Image (cartoon, rainbow, N blue to C red; front, side, top):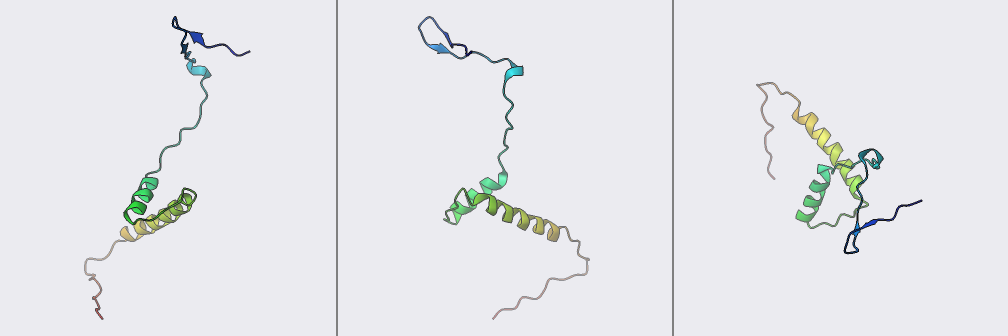
Length: 88
């Protein structure tokens, strides 16, 4: 049987505190920083990115960033030189 909410002197309802052991433990979703990056990039480029597309965009961005980490982590010898620049 459900309890009725307590009332104050003025007739307003008061929320009762639930003991810590009885609270439901829902997993708290941490915001993904890539979501903010996607929104900011889309706004900057004036693109519309639907919410349904965000997981796919996030996945592609994660792959791109992983590839960038591998390229950046590759040690080059000291005697290497940049490639020449060709102009048409």
